[in-house]
Length: 123
Length: 123
DNA sequence: GTAGGACCTGACATCAGTGTGAGGGGCAAG
DNA sequence: CTTGCCCCTCACACTGATGTCAGGTCCTAC
Image (tube, rainbow over all chains, first blue to last red; front, side):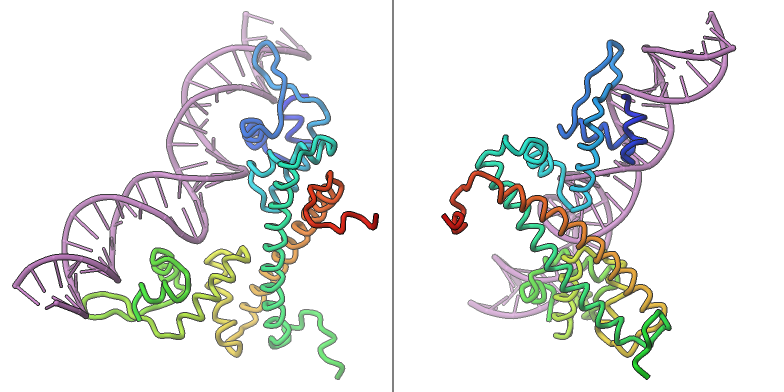
């Protein structure tokens, strides 16, 4: 499949797909004229990449953890440590966000109703 | 207090403090010669700003929600809606990160021990 | 009053992911 | 062979928070 197809099937822009390739996250064979051809397995890989990006990992981190996720048996101690680093970073970010979300939630709950929904008290 | 002091007491770089001011997040009086002077209440404000930044909010969002957090009584419906938007965004980000963290966690748990700690199974 | 540190503004650099435009080729259908 | 769409590379722009450098001023301690 070609970049346009892959783009359509993953939601990633063509630009992004080329960028992922440049970062070593996906690879493509080239036709004689230089056009990229992808195996269909790349679709899932791209979707995974996007999940990780959305989770706040950078392409470098993704390049490290992707192999583990694709071939769990290829995990080395080195890689496992990397996974742990990223997991712990996520844990910290989650805690930070939960704390802040709850703080915002309290302000919202304390706000003059806004007839947002709220059983508006048990009046 | 002066920028250097505020910087030391908050952990924010002088550069960042000036940036926060430029974004309207904090304000300072100026001496005749133009140097910034801060009230001590600004310390807490800066700490709060940093919490929000760490939680992934941008300075624009922070500029909106800070007044609510400082003076809850000043909350307008408009502001409350903004709070809700940010809270919901946080909720999404949290869900995304939790999912990814759990995926990483599974890989880590499935990894060849690494004698990380682990009661190393109930062997 | 002088040295040296703290401060001022302004501007350019960084990172990351993505958008966008230029200038040029590939390939299938008519 | 031409039309039209897809692809190629290169390269510059943007956003956001921060670093950093330059050139200049202020102020405290001696």
